[in-house]
Each structure stands twice: as C-alpha cells, then as structure tokens.
Length: 415
Image (cartoon, rainbow, N blue to C red):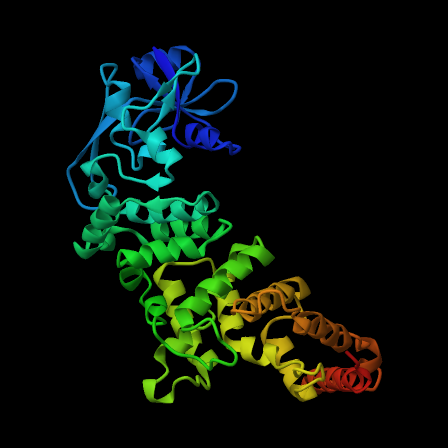
C-alpha cells in the first residue's frame, strides 16, 4: 500500500498558497484492507474512505471508462493493480494531476509543474472531453487562480469549444451547474469564470440572458466602460470586493438583464429595464433551481436598483417623494429585515462602482437609505392604537405615520 497527497493540495503548495483540504490517493490496496485498518467507507460510485482519526478522504486508485451521456455516464474500475499514473491521467488539468509521496517526492507524469510555472491551464488527456462538467470546472479554476495570471492553453480552449458545440452541456443537471456557479462566485474575481465560459461559447448555451448583454450600448456619460456585458463583469467583481455573500454577488451579476431585451432602436437608453429584467431573473433562477433567498434578493436588486440610485441627487439632496421611499423599503422587506436590505444596498453600490472611472467614488445612497429606514421605523404602534383605529385602518395609520417620519427626516436632511 502506497499513500500519496494529490490534487489541489499539491498544486497550492507549489504556488505557496495555503491549502484548506487535503485529498489522499491509495495505490495497491483493497477495500477490505482499508476497513481492517479502521477506515470508514463513504464512497458509493468508487471506494472512498475516511481516515479513522483525521477524517480526511482517502480514495483508492481507479480508472474510468465512458459508457453513457453526461458526467454520470462512467464505469469506474478500482483495483490494487491500478498505478498512480493511470489514476492521474483521468484528472482534468495537468496542474491538478500531480502527487506527492510520503517522502515529499513529486510525482508529475504529465508535466503539471511546467504548466504551473508557466501559468497554463491545460487538460491532461482526451478523456477530458468525456465529462462536460469540466468546462465549468476549468472556468472556475481560472477564476480561483486569477491572481496568479493563469491562461487557457490553446488546445484546451479548442477542446472546450468543441465540447460546447457538441451540445453535451445539456446533460448537466441544474443543481450541478449552480454548484459550480456558487464556487465561482466565491472567488476574488468571479468575472473570469464567465469570461472563460464566454470564450468557448458556454455562456450563450447556459446563460443566454447574460449573453444577450454583449454589444448592448448604454449612455456613455454614465457608462464609459462600454457595453452592458463589460459593465456587468465589472459590477460582479465590485460586488466580490464589497461582500462575501454569494446572494449579493449573484444579484450584481443579473441586475441589468433587462437591458438585453431593450429594442435596439431605443439604445443607448433603457427606460424600464429594471422591471423588464425581473421575469428574466425569475426564469434563470427557476431553471437552475436556486435557493429562494438568492432568487428574491436578485429580483429585488433588479427591480429597485434604479430607484435606490435616485435616493439622492448628484449634489446630495433627497430626490424622491416620501411615499416612494416607503414603497422601496416595503417591497425590499427593509422594515422586517434591515440586514437583508443592507445587502441589497451593497449590490446597488457594486452597480455604481462597476463603471470605468467610478470604482472608488463614494456611494452615498447606502448610508442615506439606511437613515431613511431608521426614520421610518421611529413610530409608536401603541400610540397609534390608542387613537382608537381598528381593523384595516390600523395598517393605513401606521403607513401614514411612517410617511410623516420620512417627510420630517427629509426636511431636516443635509448631506
């Protein structure tokens, strides 16, 4: 029995990057031998075991053979005769196909170290094309390693493009696609994930609502960065700098989908794109079976980012009517969940900063809207009830009291 450290832990160590998970490969062992040493078997498709003390995963060396469609269509063969080289050749990228033995020696049969040093993402073998999920995984690795300057090998890009063109991405389940998106959203530069997918034609297949943003013009005064796709990628990365919350980042990604369906003759204006974008966000969220909280935040940011941006004028003066401020607060759920509303404001801040030349401009709307919310909440329900109102009149009285509080706040407001 020989045990090797494999995959991301080896890659990250070579990059001088801290690895949070360690995966181990066992060559020359049977499931019975692992169980006899106290390991606990957890793998169903192939033998994976948990170490009796560390609980880290130890997988038996295996080979795979494509027998059906999609990423489930594999026949796995695990046997003590399977070599380390045979196991590693089935992995996705050369930089992930390195191993380290117990003495610290590097096993690198497919030149992963060379590609690591040259910052190249290259597939290990033609077996790469048998698993459509790898198109998304490579894009995710590009985003994860963006700070190191990795680029896609030409032959890998061609192979991924061919895989997309073959239509095999349609075999991916919605849940699996979303899992990769979430992992990509958690990186420091998630735009790279979508840029790589776009370069091989996958955005058009998986996220046509986003693909439709290419080439859509906007008023140059407010968007000197260019078309809506470029703006969207900048907003996504701005959100990644402002918040670790995947819901905020996803909302930033989809907030302008409505601009993709604006009739071309109306460009560069996109009046009403906020409302037009909501059904598109809903459709995308339902297609990939997103968590309800993720969907709702994305819908709210899409629908109300325009009004939130208008809370203050450019010279710092309140711009909307008291009723309109309250409408936004109510529809965004701010009166019940201030923390969630603050997350909505962060996504709006990312929208404002995701523009060329505006990256470091203070977003005064955020603190202003939180002050408006505070004012709206400064009402005494008991005092209102003491006036004798009953039934449906109670909610009307509460709303009128909130409007008055907001009006008084606006009158005394000074930026």
